[in-house]
Amino acid sequence: MKPHLLISGAAALCFAAPAIAQNPTADVVFINDRPIQMGMEQDQLIRLVDIDNNNSYQDANELVELYNEAVPAFIRNVAFRVEGGATVGYWTNTKPNDVLFRGADTDSSGTLDQVTAFYTFTGFGLSGTSSTQGPKGVAVGPNGAVYANLDFPGGDLLRFVDLNGDGDAEDAGEAQNWITNASFGSYTVPGLTGPVSVGTQNILRLAPYGTDGVLLYTTGFGASKDEAVYAARDVNGNGSLLDAGDIQLFFNGSGGIADLPKNPDFFNGNFPVLEIANGTTPSQPFYARLDLLATSLEAGIETYYFASTSSNTGTFAFNINGQGVNGLIFRAQDSNLDGDVNDGGEVSMFYDGSSTGPMADKLDKVLGIGFEDGSLYVTYLFGNAVVVGRLTDLNSDGSAMGSNEFQPFLWDANNYGIVDPFVGGLPFVNTATALPRNSFANYTITGTGCSPWGNVPVATGTGIPRLGTSDFVAQVTNTKVARPAVLLLGVNTTSWVGFPLPLDLTLFGLPGCNLYQDLQLTLSAFTVSAGPDPELDGVASIPLALPNLPSLVGFKIPMQWGVIDVTPSTAVIALTHLLEVEVDN
Image (cartoon, rainbow, N blue to C red):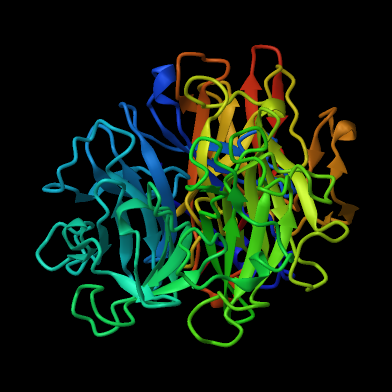
């Protein structure tokens, strides 16, 4: 099929009204981690996208398998950023080998079609067979760096930069071993009475810090439990973190190491203490871990979120005062610009979803957080269901505990009524994050379709409509094979030749059908087979070539598909819902 040029359609687009503002619902990506004991280690990356702008992810096509290892895998953490105008992901995997992967959506199909090893961990004494070692945390910085660490007993922290642009960091000079297990004990921060060793042998999570640094949550082991967040930055650029100031204590709410400075708000009654009784070894208390980290830029100020990973039913459910420490989410800003958020008043309770907290909506166990477009998206357990909600500080008081500031159940795995792609049943999520809306596709769906033969065709597409390209391909699916298909393009969704839209087409011999756009241009194709069922597996595709007109940026192109079924006695037509794609630059 040759690309079609939007001639009359493009001319009309230049005079169209501005597009309606997008619903701020972000994309959410989570890791579906099948537990080892279930014998299902085929981990997946799953994406939720609010295609139809109804403020939920519960509808058809709104849950997508972004990536599937298709072999035994143990994906630990994932982070995303935009590179060259495209969203790419980085994730750590310990099966069958210890690898940091990079995945890109090169064809804008909404899935990661190009996945390569960004860095393979060799020479670290890793077997690739144990869930307690190997690459774990991952973070991406705005300056092109990628950070990853090795879990206990490794303890290494590495910084990667793809200097030659070949899609990996395997070449000379592209990987810096910022922290090494061999130098354990050499990394210190100022303590209350002297230098304190940083527990680098058990780093759990990473998050970006500024333009050239990384935050790391460490837990320690035995009697030495940091349970603290450190900021790491190679101040003098010598490739290591052994110099004064390279590592500093960033946030400590636990008191796990007595000689570390502590955030006072966790010890003066403002927040629940994080210490948990240990009946087996009272001299070695447990601590609720605030090891879910998220970084955002809010009004030009770098802002940080820390969430507890305690479960309301587990060993770490309650602190020594009987307060629930599950479902706690904190927000922090460095008010005095001293490079940390460990001072009084710099941390606030963003949401108390604990079992003993004041909020009606509980977060039984937080699984992942990500800040996007003014809101914190939280993936959590509610009972036995994986749920996604949104927290928004509407009244600017530093929390999301006010009226209507929490929107729960944007997605609920137990009530998701669409056929899903999960391996082994309902998802077992070990982390999640948020991305800008439509990071892998740029269209919205409204209205309903119609069909005289049962199955209703679906309007969809791949790619992003960019100026001067044919990157977006309009498609119709879920229809009959070898049938004429017509793409109906418009420039507005308000009126057509004097008729208000949507227009009921019953009087035109199409009962149950609606016209949703003003029908300025039609393009034709034939459906071809995309599967074994000739009644359901028909697909037609038409690339849309857009002129290089800057005035089109932000405009939404409305379109529908019509599929015609010709029989010896009559011809019947099925129509899709409305699909709108927004022009990018």
